[in-house]
Picture (cartoon, helix red, strand yellow):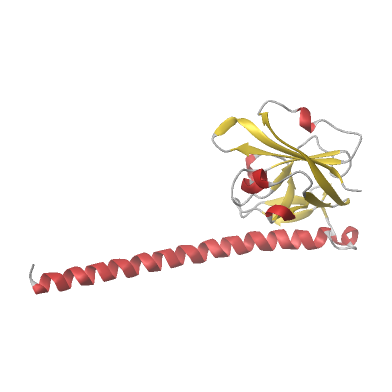
Length: 202
């Protein structure tokens, strides 16, 4: 191979490498900005629902108790964040929003439509993704779940971790005691759901 050809190839390889590095850097910056926006949303809601004066801070948004959070999927839409969910053992913290439709679950953990906000069985669902509940499978019995809402804060201890059929709604039935039920998909098993239930830690 001629020396001039080698030089041209070397320049092409170096140029391509620089372009790839620049492309990855730009992509990384945009992903960081998106991540920062998500974290700011979570932290602002978390601060409100853990503030002793939250009843004075929370605005009546869309005729329900909650605080508006900017949608990540539609810049013209705001969702009603009704609280936060925290599971320290898996380093998880996110907002809780009303509803379990795809738009709601794209923003945070969804409160089932029939569920109470605070008393009885608080029923939640979330995607099995890294942003949300991918690590829920790593919790253990006895782990603590912290739930802060517009109506108050509760702490729960996990008592049940099991896989259920996607058509099994029995774990979402109302209860006389205070508990929280969290459901997410099971990877590569579309007919199953992972269900974690915890009772109030008094």
